[in-house]
Length: 269
Length: 269
Image (cartoon, rainbow over all chains, first blue to last red; front, top):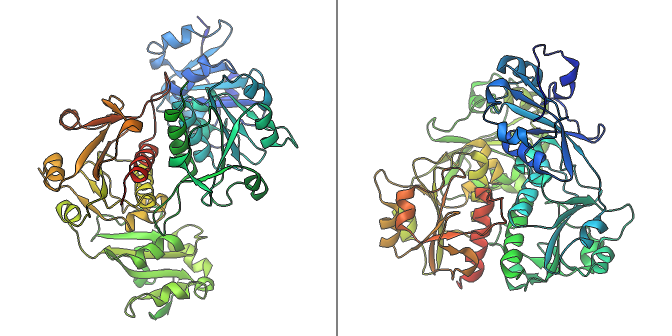
């Protein structure tokens, strides 16, 4: 069991990272991030690539959360507070009653994740996804369909941003993820590890429904407006989802769900 | 061309419905609603089931929007204002520069919409979808995959709520929609019009990927937590989307996209 540390003063310096969480974000500050709610904090505690640096819990919730707390290393502090103190620390009514500060335990490269994939695998590669809702939604779908890795280009937002974690229901902490190296050619990298590339585009040459899922599939998505970089699209196998006349607009997170369902249900693992 | 009416006083009573649009919602007040942004207002102007009662536009945008304005009936007032006046009316910086007040021109029943469907058709029926993001997302997918009707039970939120319209990118104004009648049995209704029912549930008996799309398909979705009413599910053909172990959670809007893609790409119209 970890140590339970009651906090009575909202100004206590030990809970500084939890202060006014709604107004700011820890991303970029020493690799720390905020996890919120029991489901997400449980994902953090279970994760092998992230660890909880501390938890902050409403004292009335401690008993119900004991099974999860028992899984924490003994040195991890669990701060508790009454609901009014908790609300003052967080800066808003924290109905969920549980927060954690997480940190990375390592930063695998994209090649490391691809090398770890089995003979039947699916990975998602994202280009310029800057919207936290979409990022969270894509990770949620990636987790639901057992995706081996999500690889991000430099134009993507951080999946550890608080809203992205929340929308993903904790999946950004569970699905292996890495950034493309600076100057790294994504298609050459995928080819090196034997992945067949499927680039999603409204102007794609084939339809998704007619696509026989590759055994090792890399699924490429761009942001809703600009789409995938034209130079990339020109060199990749491109696939479209046919849409009704006059309304050629699917949300990119929804698109990822449609594509992952098609690939996952057609791949024999 | 409609009449252009410059507004210089933010307190002008003619633009009362536009005042402080972020803080309140017109839904439920005389069947009026607010449409926002050029894409959504264009959907309103094109709609046969809704009409624009008036528009409010930043004066600098009038010229670019002329083709759309020309499609308005001459009696529809188009109010214009400078950006500062517009921002004061709306109560926040209205970067999109265009709002409209819409109203229904009629309220077809669910049976009317089902009767109008062709021999190959797909309709969506929703139970207890109370989240405006999900409602908007489902309509967006319904439009993208050419859905004939979206039918709502009494537990659903109003798709004309401002946020639902915005998330749907105007699709809530384009896809035919109706409410189930009070006490109406949805399965008997669908059966009466020759629709085969597919009820989505994590505990569904068949997998979606193995489902041969019915020629007239009715796709039933419940809200993410409680799902479809058990009494309904017990009487319907139930279908699941298989998910990776330990993460059985797809967003309901994403689910609708996956199901509609499978049905639409397998149906021969």
